[in-house]
Length: 413
Image (cartoon, rainbow, N blue to C red; front, top):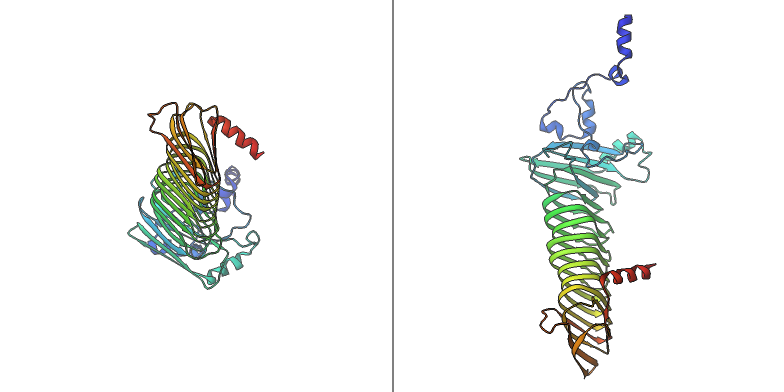
C-alpha cells in the first residue's frame, strides 16, 4: 500500500476503516416481521435496522449484556389499534417524536428478565425462543394483533412495544403492565390471572381509560387524563398523583385508595374494606366505604359520603352541597372562618367552633344524641353542610386551608 494511501487512512475514524459501508433498503413486509435473530444472516453490507433503543421515548443505559431475545419492526399508520393477549409482562411507550415525527413505525421486542439477565450467554438467550410461540398480525397498517403462547408459568420475559402516540390499546395480561407517554382514544387493560402484578400508568392522556385488575396495585404516576374507570377486586391499592377528566370512577375490594389531586365534573370512590385518602378534589365527589376511614385535605365542590364503619375527616375549602353519613364513626370537618353555609349536624355529641359566626342556632335532643342546626354569615347561602353519625361525635372546626396543611405535615413528622 502506498504511503499517500496510508496517510489518508490515518485521518479516518476507526469505524470507517474496519466496517463496510451500510446501505438501508426497504424490505418486504414478510422480512420485516421475521425474528430479528433470523435477520442476522443478511450481510451488514446490505441492510440495517433500527434498534428499540433508537425508538425509545427517552434514552436509557443499556445492560452490559444485551438481554433481547427477538425484535420485530413494522410500518404502520399514525392512528391504529393494538390488541394484545399475553401471559408475560408488558411495557408500552410512544415513539420518540423527534426521531419519528411521522409516527409511522411500531416495534415489538421480547426481553429476558430473569435474575441472571446480566450474565446469560447468547446461546442460552437464543434457546429461550423454543419456550414460547409469538404471533404477530398486522392488517392494513392499522390493526396490530399480538399473542404469545407458552406452557411455562411465570416465564421471566417482558414484551416491550413502541407505538405511534395516538394508537389505541387493548391488553389482556398476566404479568406487570406499564404504559407511558401515550395519547390514545381508548385504553383497556384486563388482568386475566391473579398473580399480584402491578399496573403502572405514567403520563397518559385518553378519552376512555378502563383498567380491570384482579390482584396487585394500580399506580398512576405524573398524570392520567380522560374518562377513567379503575377497579381492583383483590387487596391491591389504587394510587395516583393526578386524575383529570369529566367522569372518574375508582373501586377496590380491600385496597387503599390514595390520590394527590382529582379534577373532575363527577368522580366516585367505592371500597368494601379500605381507607380513601384524597389530597385535593375539585368537582362533584361521591365516596362509599363499607369499613374504613375517609380523609380529604381539600374539597372544592359537592361532597356525598357514606361510611358504614369508620371516621370521616375533611377540609371544606369551598364547598357546595355536602352530605356525610356514618353509621359508626366520628366526623370532623374544617371550614374557613369566612364560609357562608347552612348547617345540620347530628351525632352522639356535636361540637361547633366558637370562632365561627353561627346564627339561628337550634339544638334538639334525638334518640341517639343531638341535632344542631343554624347558618353561618348568610341565611340565603346555597351551600349546605349535613353531617350525621349514629354512633360517634361530630366536630366543626374553624381552620383555613394553609393552617390545615401545616398541622397535617407536623402530625406526619
